[in-house]
Image 1 (cartoon, helix red, strand yellow):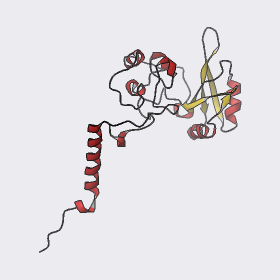
Image 2 (tube, rainbow, N blue to C red):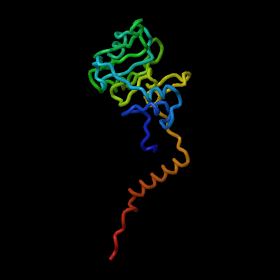
Image 3 (cartoon, one colour):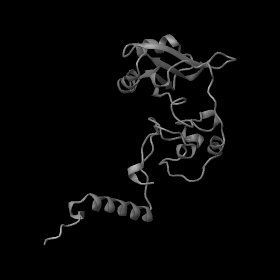
Image 4 (spheres, one colour):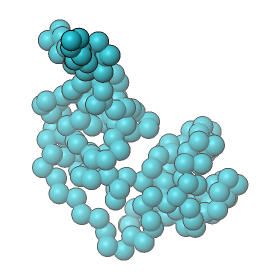
Length: 200
């Protein structure tokens, strides 16, 4: 992987192998959950109505947080269309995350910028794009994929706003190839590389 093609955040496709790697360069799964994610087939519920690019994912929430509390927080910055707090279907207790839909796509960007550091009950919430429908190949946490995670679990996932990929460390052969690539690119664009006109 050349540095020119490397990105800190996944924007087009979700790759469980890369998500399990701190710099997106792993070639083998390092934990069983990555194996599970590579073989998983995830289908989205058919009853989801929110527009994916108008929707924000919010996690690290108190288990008793309500839709009204979230709407009140975010309505101060942008008009909220709907809020869905995800709850356990048996107990009704929240799972610590929710989806907030806005009327305009640009409002998601605005919220992510202006509400960074937002807290609930003294704990900072995690705000990110809703990627389940916009990122090709998405695999949720319960199937071994997802983002984030805890260091203690040994199942950290990278490539998101909360845990972006780190700059890859190139080996000596890779460094040589990268230098050769840059030199070739420079020679192709340098004025001295243009063929000289013959003087008659």
